[in-house]
Image (cartoon, rainbow, N blue to C red; front, top):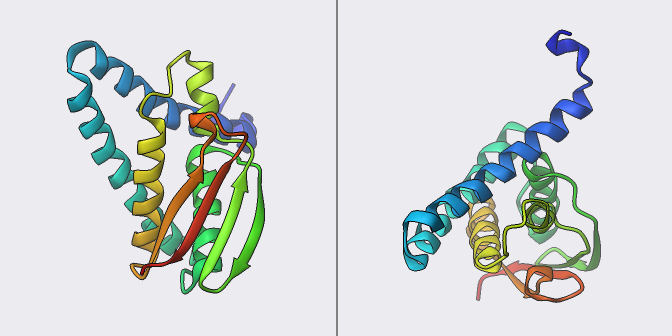
Length: 163
């Protein structure tokens, strides 16, 4: 078999799964040798940097980020490239505010597949999303009001102008 014999879709699926599992593996390994506070600090810094990469990828793809709708769309596209597909519904969308509901999450699913508790997932996801949105457009930010990893049935993300 040669590399080109492997379908692109399968290569992509393997790459995104490996990429997101890499972060989980590091967290699990760190927890075996470091205290929880140190691990959370390191993980948060890594996820903030990961969020900044969204801007670089969006620029390569020439994705817009002028308003909340652009930012939300760009974040979804880049997020699915680097983490895998998410199921979502736009609840409300205007140029200054977008509310999305996500009913699946590749990071949440990866924790379950690897039998890793979602201990720091809410904080890390927030750090990543805030960093990604603010790198796409510093006038905007993002918050979660509901999270599957905290027991909710879906994640609710709000992207809006900073106050």
